[in-house]
Structures are given as structure tokens and as C-alpha cells.
Image 1 (cartoon, rainbow, N blue to C red):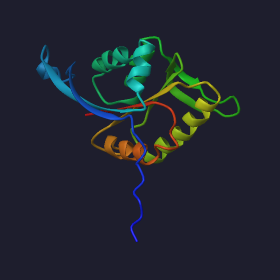
Image 2 (image 1 turned 180 degrees about the vertical axis):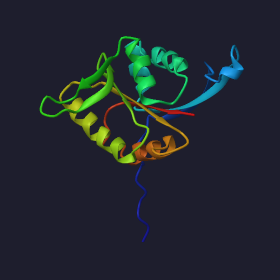
Image 3 (image 1 turned 135 degrees about the vertical axis):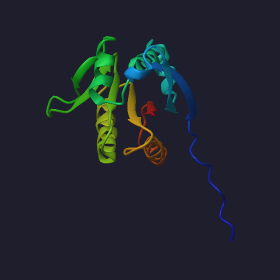
Length: 171
């Protein structure tokens, strides 16, 4: 007996790889620039949501200012663009986003894959309460939590993650 195939859920995800010019911090190469790459994974039309808010280009321009993959440096770069640092997620706990602007939450995770999953759960709660429109998630491509592992998890959790996510992997 042949079982009928069911349609897979439709994903509104695309994968883009970009090269962005940033200044090097190597003092021996003063005046020269180097190409840094970052990968984007766009889940549930996050790019369109951010464009409507006027934040998509701002995010990419802000990342051009970052010289090292360092949590504090990335967070400060966004704060200089008017993003609110350590924005509280829930009044009942000390949970915070690394930065937030116009219901776009920014989370920077450079060490634990479990923290990524925790942030997805917190984002679901914030979305349910009307405090989140889109999640911007910054990680790295070369060590945990790796960009490709988070991308995989977003795809696996697609039915649960009902909000747009812009995943950025820095190299």
C-alpha cells in the first residue's frame, strides 16, 4: 500500500551570502581594509519586516563598523545607532535582549547553543505578548554556536518559531 505524500510546510526562508568591507584592527596594516564575510538566513520574511521599520540597512551598516567578533563591541555599535541596550523581556524575570529598537530584538550569542534555544523560547513569549515583531540573532560561523547549526535548528523548529528571524553569522 502506498501512502500519499503530504506537502512540506512552505518556508519563507532564503540564504544570502555577502561580503562586507570593514577596517582591520591589525596596526601593521594601517590604512588597509580587509573583507569580512557574514552570512544571512532570512526566516519568515525578516528582511521585509526590518525594511519596513527602516532597520535592515542600519543593521548591515552597523556590522560594517564592528572590527572584532566581540559581544560588547557588537552591542555598543548598535547602541550608538539608538538601540536600547539590555532591554527587559519580561517584568517577572531579569531576562533581557542585548539590544532592542522598534520591537526588533537583538540577541548576540557567541558561546552556547543552549542559550540560542532559550532565546527562541523567550522570543515566542515576547511575540505572544505583543512586544516583539522580529528577532535579529548574531552569532559566528566558525565556532559554537555555529551559524549553520542555528540555521538548522530554525528550520527544524519552523512550525514553532512563528516570528521572523534574521540570523547573522559573522566570520
